[in-house]
Length: 173
Image (cartoon, rainbow, N blue to C red; front, side, top):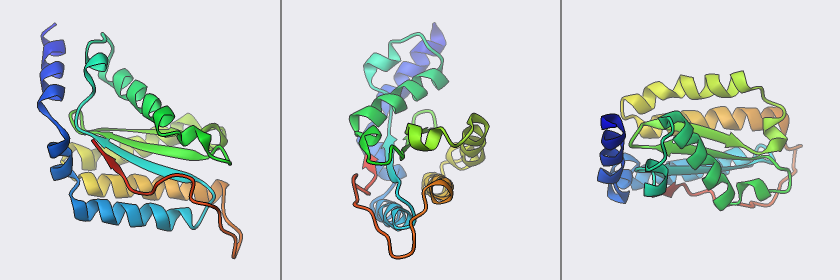
C-alpha cells in the first residue's frame, strides 16, 4: 500500500515544466532534426513522446510499474494515430520521466519482423542513460536504434521519398 502511495506522489509531483527542463528546447530541435533525417532513409514514421508522470487513472490501477508504462505507451500509440501509417511501420518512443522508463511500440509492419528479444535488448541498452538523467542521450540512442531497424526492413530506394505522415517534433507533456 505504501509503495502505491509513493508512486502516486512521485507522478503527481512532476508536471510539464519538469519535462521541459529534462528535455530542453535545444534538445527538442535536435531530436526533431534527427527524426526528419531518419525518415529520409526509410518509409517508416517515428514519434517521440516524453511525459512527466502518468495520468491519475493509470496511477489508481493496481498493476506493476512496467505494466502501467506499457499500457500508457499503447494508449498514446493509438491517440497519436501512429498505427495509421500507409506502411503500418510507425514507431512510438515513449519516455516516462517519473520512472525514467522507456517503452517502444511498433506497428505490426515492423513488429512482425523484429523479435521480442531485440526490442527488449534495445530498451535495456538505453536504460542506463535514463537512469542517470541523460534524457537527450537516451532518446537519441533510441532514435538511432529504431532508425536502424526501419532502414533494414523498410529502406527507400535511391531518389525515392515518402510523404511525412506524422509530425517529427517530440511531444513533451
